[in-house]
Image 1 (cartoon, rainbow, N blue to C red):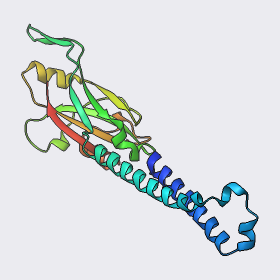
Image 2 (cartoon, rainbow, N blue to C red):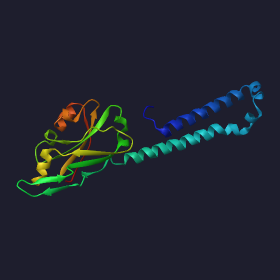
Image 3 (spheres, rainbow, N blue to C red):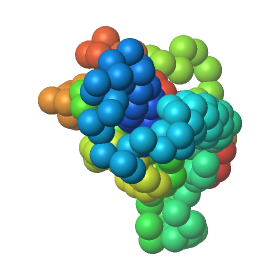
Image 4 (cartoon, rainbow, N blue to C red):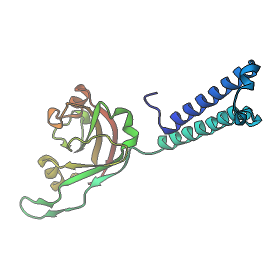
Length: 210
């Protein structure tokens, strides 16, 4: 029940009211003396149809709840990612990057609702060439973000190593979204494997620019 939403609770209440009315009607049917003393407006035959109406309504609410969940299932957790677009390459010996040196991950926080009480999220990005990528160090990491039932914009500041790799022509950035236990901070891990060893979950990964 802790995972119920609006439609689940509405279905529960509707069924409960229908069952209550049905129980009252049954009790009055087997007790003519009590039935004769009820108010005039409760003697209408309409009341006999009320439980059925509530049960039909509950079926409609169950269908709506199911369709809403199916809609959520087809949503993507990460729906955009990449550089913020505010940087440029400055030629020289050595070259350098100027401007906003960061990337972003935009995600649908509703899809992480089950983790909100015990986790926060961190975005990371890195360049991968060879070897076991979960053991790569020098990750660029975001700050911690609370899990909220809305669009969440995660900003990842590039590390000096990441920026230097861009200057040298690296491309094909890997992005990972981590759910980290409350109390764990980004500076406590240096690789994705270390993060997992500390209880973090890799909930999504993508590859893209820059």
